[in-house]
Picture 1 (cartoon, rainbow, N blue to C red):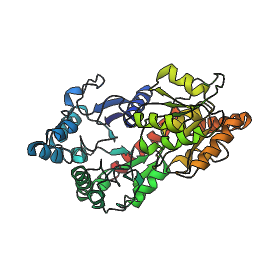
Picture 2 (cartoon, rainbow, N blue to C red):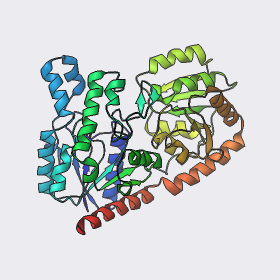
Picture 3 (cartoon, rainbow, N blue to C red):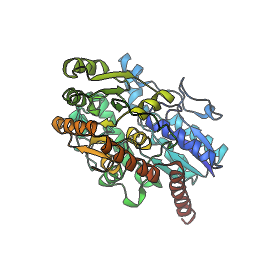
Picture 4 (cartoon, rainbow, N blue to C red):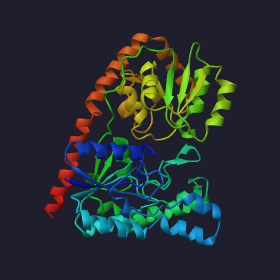
Length: 412
């Protein structure tokens, strides 16, 4: 099978790009051919199809210029990209893919690339890595708080709330993009949407995307990772340092647990703010490691007692939890979004209510002081990871969707 893999960035920029590249490798390992389409970018990985990639659009630089021409370009290009539409049509004509698999296309490639594929009878599968199809701000967050005002299709709330970067223009563009998708029939032109969590599937259905067009398939992770390291004296948070991740709550809770040692593994825009928080409330029990990768990251996870994810927002299917479970580590996390699908409270970890610092402190204290509890929960977490998050299972789940949409198309 020849798969046209479509993602804005052709390098490991975030979870969506990482998953796309991992899936591409998985398909190629199983004998399929993958044709890539993306936006040109200096960090892109080499590709034999890069000549077909759409020109780079640097929205931050355009917005900084402040000129009316730049503002107009941001508005039009973020909703409809005529160049991307033409180039994907040419790529499809020359490579003749059997199926197209979309990932993150909004804002740069845009949904303008759908129609050329529809006209050529190429089935489209779209993995949703966020809530963009039903939330103009992609995350159901407004000024740091969970917000569902736009459900099912009341996108006009976005500029009213200025939820996109606190900006009226950015929020208005996000609103117009959402309405454009509905006016142009995007939900009915895509043969199947894939969501990593059942929670996200439910939100798409609430947003009036047909139930039979949405399939939940968990992402996958490498199960062959280091697991035999001696347990250290620390627990960890891994991921981007963002306000919505609730790390400030973790710092305060950890500071109130005797004998706690918390490592924050990652980097992000609120790092300095969090360091100030740690100096004030962390009681010397919180450390920042910066970004870790490869063997160093694996060693750190393998030596941790458990991981903590105290998110304030609707997490989808966090890679940090999959990685922890694959390493046989229990999890302390918020009972929000897709997390409860992963963490069975009292079995593979402990869940606590959003924003409840005292409940988080209690969970950390309990997990940190009970080695037998950690071992048993870690063992059950590893068993669940083997059942749900392995490469082979993911491959066959994806192939089932590919076969279903191709069969449906051939019968039309």
